Length: 595
Ligand SMILES: [Zn+2]
Image (tube, rainbow, N blue to C red; front, side, top):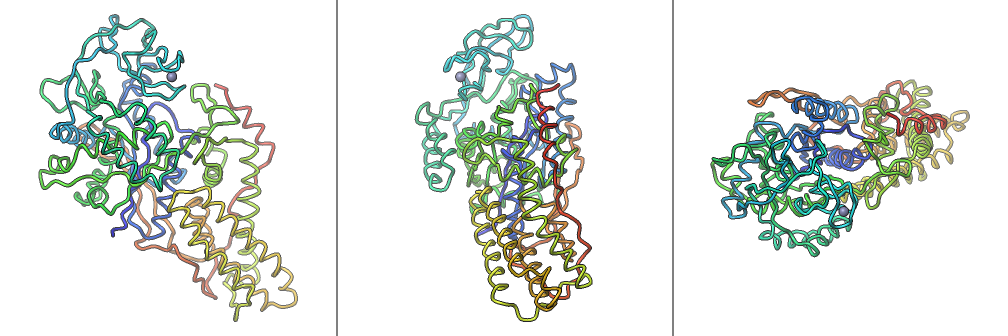
């Protein structure tokens, strides 16, 4: 068995900044699981990038009157800044607008074509007579033919969540100029998903016993009600990946088809950047590797049904075509732990109404671990959750500061003061000391099991519960009084507390890595827990794109109970977290919905 773990996180569209709902939906859970597996010593690769093509991006560029390259680069660079500041530790965060991604996507197209899953057909498509061109699906709005919602995009209804057949849209209008488009014939490639339906059903049934019911239920439900029907994979658009067939100039690969291929192409790009061009296979053709896909519920069907269909359909031929060597099938997802949505103060988050807490803006006032903590304890794992400013402040003050931060800080400060900056020698430990050590060390099992199964709220709650147990222990032994009459007893208490805090540091580290890293130095360790993130520009024939990368700290794992030694030199401690004024909540609510 290999221990290769691929963490594949949803690709954000380059048309809007990232808000807390996006962070808790996919980026943060992916990072937490990645950090856990790194601490375990597993070989982890975290990939994603900016979805730079597609009409959300061209629409944004049109509305701003800017070249589409400028718009995609602007958002892309903001994403990178946010992920670095929040510690979303991508091994590679890249973009779909790279020469490598073009090549990989085209090879996937050719493999599916070779295996008989593609066919061409002329179809009616909305055409704009005033603009003299075909309109991409998102350029056409109208009435949903399923639920009657009037603001539906022609390819998807945001109210009922249905994927729509664009030409069936009622009362169509162009988003560019409001004119009424007409249907005209245009030729496209289609992926015959119906041929792959039995494979996808089998894939889902095999994983049914350990996937979230929300994910497997929605996927199988949609297949049972609608089936997997052929879908066009090309479109009339010039911003995107050219169709690799002569005579198809002016058309490109559909973004739903090519963006998911980014998980594969980003792995390949990472392998090239790190100078080990073939190593991507360790995550994609080694069948013991596990791939986790972190996405929001709006993306479930694409990742749990359509992407597996693409991978099945490409067969071993993708590797053959892409490498020119021997073929090998590509790994299917191991788990797709999709999250539900986070609302804000009881209402749906809306970027256009500015009813949102934007990641970069939030970080100008608060620390990243405060954000990560609240977004984990309140993660919409099985049902929608709500960002509530009062609750954010209460959780920060009661859990993060009072239960965990003060525990670490008062113990370290006390040790630092009374034992001259060294870990005290406890001599023989008492039964009560041994008991709290046993309880906390059990967390490596319990917290670890929750993390393996991507139950992140439960994992963090368990770590917090253990911190509360240590607080109770300290209330009982009370070293602050012991020190006055019996310094040896106080040494036993403080040594024990430091040792369990050293263990808790690791149990909390996947969730709140910045404070755990600081605590690690206060405890006197020079070897960091995690590696470093850095930005590096890459160049290819399409131009330059920035990438966010990660340099690992150390090989091998450290997910194991503390072995803190008496006599270890401590660093002067400082508080790990900031207490927040409850009145801030009202200030924050006043910002919502303003321009
Ligand atoms: Zn609808």
